[in-house]
Image (cartoon, rainbow, N blue to C red; front, side, top):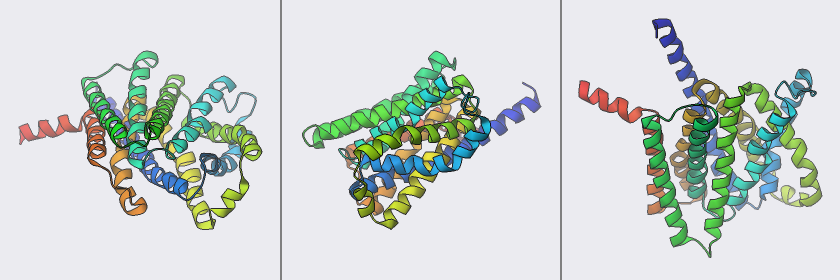
Length: 311
């Protein structure tokens, strides 16, 4: 590899890293805000509506400009698959999980499963080989899931916590598959973000108004609704999808999947002052294992060891 190619690759990795960090930061805040909304009486359906409505209103003109016939160049089949993975299905699974399990579980299990699926599917369909760092990092993530599973069995209420954990796992698998397929199909990040938020809104709204109680939204209060619109609709539903898609484009879905592993520590720390939810011993061990997996997968541990040897 010549100097120009090496420099271009370095810039691409740095750009992908910055986009991934932006997505991870939004996910951490949105996870806490989602749990706060559930505690305030909002349903998973309410939160899903607030997640996609703002982005759909902003992105609909772009879809109109790019064309509905081929769905902005992505195609209806691919667009529908990606929307089902990152749209209402993911949101409802994730939000419903918070009605049964504490924040620390959702903050660990969903990103961990996203990571495992992202690595596995990338190796199968995107032809991205497994590196030694990725394999060891994934092993630490599995260890984190074991700790969380043990916490559910010891402190769960009649299996309901375990049910919440399964919902978090399903949500994480959806997001990991979304990243892998986005990379495989080489979809433009801005276009796929626009398609997902607009289609998600169009698919979900009829069911919401037919089955939901609108009075619950009104009773939540204006401050809570404004908070959810910014954190869910503009943050998680729009900016984070775009940021993650760009990270996938620069880094590949396997590496980009590890950004989700940054969420557990950040979200759990933020939840202490905001929600008053202090992680237990097994939860802390699970968070530590997953974050360690992230550092190993990105080569951070290897780089630190090399620098220590050179010092």
